Length: 390
Image (cartoon, one colour):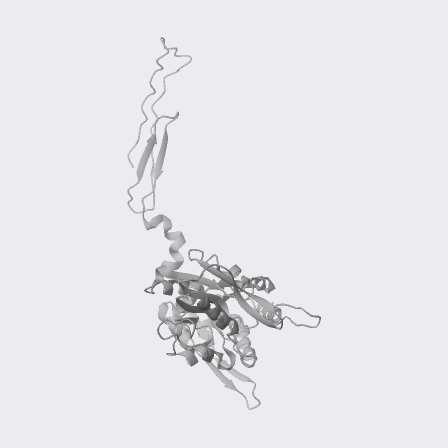
């Protein structure tokens, strides 16, 4: 870089004589700037000459050089060996399709004659020194033990890091104790996951999407690093694709759903519903907001029987909603309760829904509702592929 010499100071207009003792002459200071071990760069130099001494500001170029440390994980993604349970095979394949850095690895899920798991991790020595992840689905108590056996075994194979992806935390609705003797099974499962063996790189990372109760994040111990993600960005992307995207209103079935999601959806008009008791019945009413003439999308974290969502649909239609749709991250639908939701077939919100969006966090539900209106599946594959790289 070329040398820069500041100009000599101008004499004060009020001074008639020059006192060399009080104002000694200033020597010219040569400033030399040098960058080493970097490729040629075009830097901008700003001189602020109204100050004493002169300030010289060097501005780096707008290039990727300065940002590269922050983006290194994106430019050079770590290679990950992704294991998965049987029912998550389709989602695992979609995740691997999202990134060349993710390699699927197989597990043999067999059983002994007495019904207990007979498990085998193929090419276990080939995992040494690799980043490993396991895609789990605790869809029923019967499959949790065999998957926990794999989850506890993988960190001991000298892997560099270990991540468990559990899109749906199944005991999330069992977090409260209202009567003496109630058992908070959400806390129990959190404790089990908190005791996963530590691998060479440290504690296990645990990725969960839209856990039911926010306070459940505090159930996990210090030996695990829970990472809480959300499926709402998938909904936002889908809403932008709708022909009436400028006429969307978001509805929440209760105050709990509003607390969970309103900040992520704050750019939309909102309707908040509430359950009120009339005698022995619990009736859904609109607490605030106006759905009239709008395409109203009900948002919640999960659905089971679907009774509350159907009551919300009816009250929104009664108050003039032009269309009613719904989004939940986890479509559980025990006993095929998804069959209760009908398609509006032309925009009659009193008879059904225009869309019902779910994610693929519950793979058995995805198989059941495939190609059945009003259901659409928004895949978590890209979000999980990104979370694995954290």
